Length: 340
Ligand code: PHE
Image 1 (cartoon, rainbow, N blue to C red):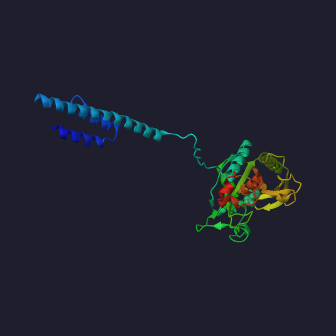
Image 2: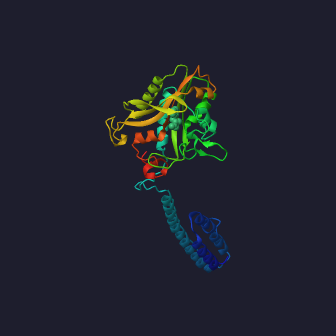
Image 3: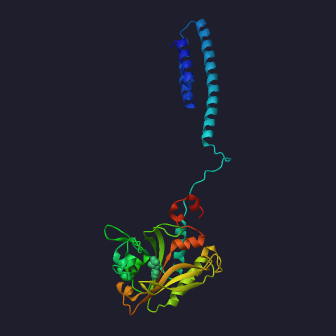
């Protein structure tokens, strides 16, 4: 090959070299033992001695020059490549970390779990029932016959009916007779769950809220048992000595029936804004299960007695955390929710 041509080729190709690997290939092709420059030297032998000398020297100089360029380039490329790798892997320990947002548990769930734990320690099982309920379980089986004002859709009863004739349960009591039929007594269960009512919402009313139903069925059951269980639960729940009082009330499915009040956890019964200065707060409905209900649950009312209670999980959560409006729970306000 012609020396001039080779020179041009070499210079051109050297310019295209972008990384160490390409440089190595280049050096092998031109400067190596079997490289193009060596080849050129072997072609010199047929030339007259003068030309051989001058051209030989020229080639030598050129080859030396290229060798130096290669060396320099090699160092630069290595430096660049090292820098690149370092930049890519560098961890800047001075930068603040990225905070990973984790979810957290809703206050109603926190309190429900706490309540479940307490009742489980007292030997109760936690069960649940359907939110879409038939009228028989929500009403008839609980001594609330057709025409009873509690069944009313829009006035007293606030019941939400479905087109199928089913209802969105208005009370977790609807599961009482389901479980009487399902498990053999003695029965000791709590039934936490969502209930629905057609309400005008305000600080203490929502169209859906949560209840915790309690049901105990056994041979000898008295109001004293009911009182003891609830008192133990409330002491454990509020971590305070609370007093309770039973006021006569009326539910079609319990006889006798009570409204149960608790001495105010905020002021210890002295009277404060939270208890409207009365010292007592209304907490739940309860009573001795009506014989008709025991019968509707498929059990013999002569043999089996029971007590039942129903409390609002929302109310208990509000009292525990001193929340003043039930609408915070479903409002989705992060400023509220993040406090728990
Ligand atoms: N189900 C009643 C209510 O929603 C509460 C209750 C439950 C009363 C069990 C007595 C016994 O108001």
